[in-house]
Image 1: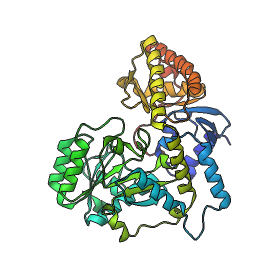
Image 2: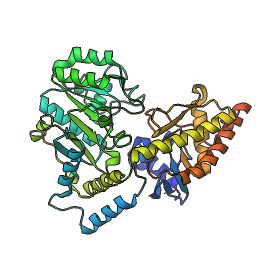
Image 3: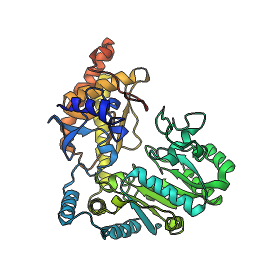
Image 4: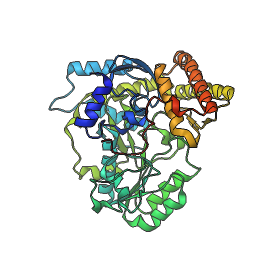
Length: 437
């Protein structure tokens, strides 16, 4: 059975939703063309289920493998851990070492709790905030996972999260009694935030938001959010799961100079090995003593070992500097080919670590598929946004550059001849959240 047939079997008969992470759904990239499963991965090289080799110039593990796949130092530490035994009835001492390390990196923080995934740690952080404050409501800005506390924002009369997450996200399965407990506002929208404070401040447990993602906040916005939250007795929890360590060692809030009450980390904390943490002040974390927060596999050893090795590697290299430089080089490659071909594409990266080009609105889906499928044929998992990693090098770029040139030239020719759709090898990518079968 080849990879496509295996995927169809999983999607149609065995696994509702087909995959465990929506971002890895082949239909979201290039239906019937994008590989679903892998056999091995190292650096930026992925070998798929059928033995084909690809360079990853897309979301690269959805932002988790910031050092590159199978980093040799992290892998060596994990192998030693597995050889010694990664699980027992006792606790791993490495979790205490990791807690100390995180508090040393973040001097404002005093206490730490761990899980093994981003969605879990967000739910734990909100649970702690509610337990500490004795309040129920949460103001949210951005994407923070799949748990009930967050998706409850879509229990109203409108699709409240459509601008923050993905359109069409149905809250089926979320208790309707949670309606009104998650209150969304847009990034940098001070008026919308102030309206939440004015109406719900007395019952607001916390404000949950990313310090930044693709752009920095407007001057004073984070400080305003923090101060207003504190004025009404709520906590500020910053979600560093995606941006954390990418632009600054320890997280972007340190670069921006704003100390929250709580902050969450996952993804790149373990560089592909499941690990997540919520850190906070002693006062903010007080509710953790009284709320039941417990899970067997939060006590396994691989996660903290991988995180410690990852942090050590981060200290040895200027990772933010590297991803910024490589991101700028990627943007230069795109810009050179776009200008030479007079392609109607736009460069829209505020942070080069998320290098991005934009496509014309009226034919975005078709041009996106044409780019993705032609790069696949040349051995690249490529999208209009690249999550840059330590493993992306100038040597890799020497292979990527001419491939992009060839595909951009093909796109330019298809636009001139008005035959983009005729060149597509399958359906366009699915947008938003939709049922597959």
